[in-house]
Length: 320
Image (cartoon, rainbow, N blue to C red; front, side, top):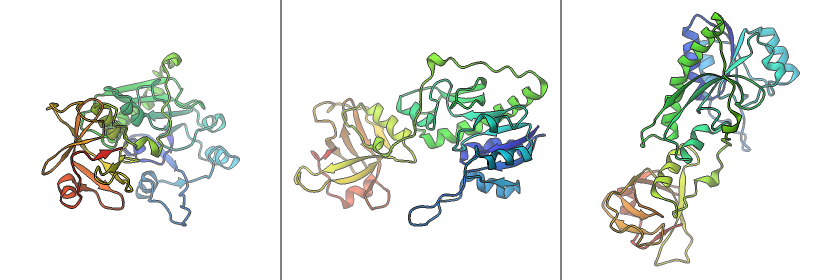
């Protein structure tokens, strides 16, 4: 198969690597253009841009892949099949039709659940124990195409969205190769998604990192796991001796859930209830969390032990 890969982020990398090592030919990589900040600074080099450069595969970065320019580019390339993953743009019918067999997409959820931009994050926020990847045949509707392959993954409770995304990307690569081989052999049998079970996974917003301490310890740990590397989870530290002073924002985590809950529910959620040498404990709506690391606003991340040596946190202080 002659392939065009459309991708920008790291979720695409393992499959791109396996495609280069396979019998299939990668004609080109299509990636999103580099963006600049308001200060005129360019962001870091996206993973797929670097990978295309390293492998010397032709790379293109149309402003709008669905424009006439994008359509003409795809027609010149004449791919048999598209592979789309972590690209950042929804493809039109006209783009999909430039490839004889349309396109395949690798998505980081067990579709039809969690369609959209943040499937892993949303699954963790919802407390899902079973995550996974799906290979679908692309349609213009977001993540709604028929399913070709799927694989489940049951992450450890210590794994964040960062580690899980890396693992799912590795899991998905052989599934894509298998799907391409199925298309070549004529054993391609996609299964329509059950629309009644579909759910959405919209982009994460910064304010979702604010911790509501009335939630259970389990839910706050899931929030921490889901919102790495951005926006992380944070709270405002209010000193009991100076309640009217400006609160200090703290980025918190990782946490450890305390098994000894003798003080459980005797304090208002968010209250600092115990201080030890290398951690301090906070009451939640159900359960107690030990803070192991944190980052005060404008400072570097540090262990709780280092923080406690330099900051006068006391029992009775409130995280809000």
